[in-house]
Length: 130
Image (tube, rainbow, N blue to C red; front, side, top):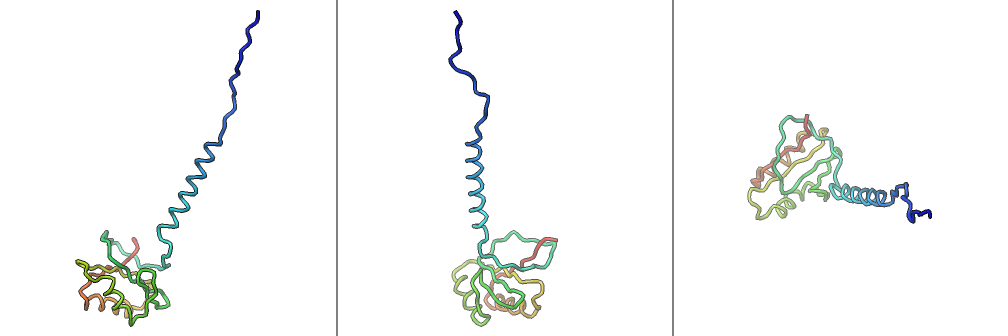
């Protein structure tokens, strides 16, 4: 009497669960990278060896065509001081980070520095590492 084996071992591998996992990771990465800086301005910052880790309350950006932005909101220079006052009102040691393209004339940078000095704001000039 011959005994037959009822189940045979299947030698194939199913990659369906692995592809599902990779698809979910891909979706997560796509969503996470768009949330990092969705509306960032493209500026070529000057290089510097000194880098600070201090977190500013707000940022002021000056583009090469001399347009001013508070965070990502366009602001006329005449309204810049009022907008900064409203954003930094009631903050202890209000800190502003100044992001300006390396082609911006120094006079424009000094204008923003004077606004910060007149209102007793701490000013950080943003640079990129050397």
